[in-house]
Image (cartoon, rainbow, N blue to C red; front, side, top):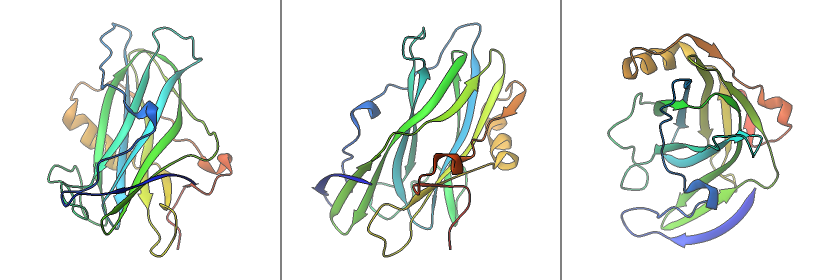
Length: 204
């Protein structure tokens, strides 16, 4: 994991210091050939903020497109969940539906903010990675649940669990987007990354 900087948080929580690519505007593609992206972000055990970044590939593909999969799984006060969550409990988070131009995409980076007392630390990847997915015109692509788990006492931010929770997530997605087109699941097997930051199930 790559250490960036330590910030002293005010009593109302930390101010995120993010990977420069994380400053991405939320956009909704309005073309007639749009496809839909569905995913969920979660925190296990304790609240956390993280952001997974994706982009359309290759880099010169038009229209150029970048996005952020933000988990606002932390409330105004450090250590609390915000009120508006799609599910709460041991796992708390939200399901997101986005409208994108068709094409090839990859998740390529992340930011994670951890808080210990009044100190906030921001992390981003130490090595390159790629989690690919495809958006088809007039179709929905479900890419899975991205949950951050934290092992108490560990010196790093923990790890991401990438898994298929479509039974739960698609019901929530359809409540937000009733006309959601037919769905194809593309949940990437992150064991192929050979990176301890990613797992397919919760670790002991």
